[in-house]
Image (tube, rainbow, N blue to C red):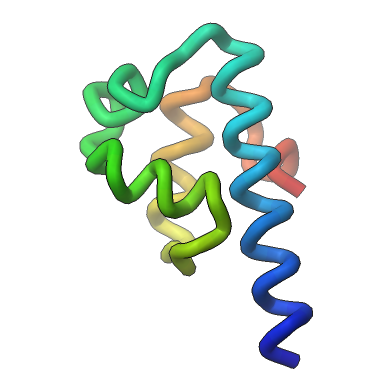
Length: 71
């Protein structure tokens, strides 16, 4: 189960990074928009941090996307 979870975290992080770059945004832009520290954003994008649902909502808002686009 742990391996599957880690794979899903990495997939989510990769998708976040892809969406962020497609919008032409830096990690600093996201930090400014939704108050999530760049270090934390980096850890999320690299699949190293489990995030709360509230954080997913904040990231979607900052990227101006629907939450389902992460998945």
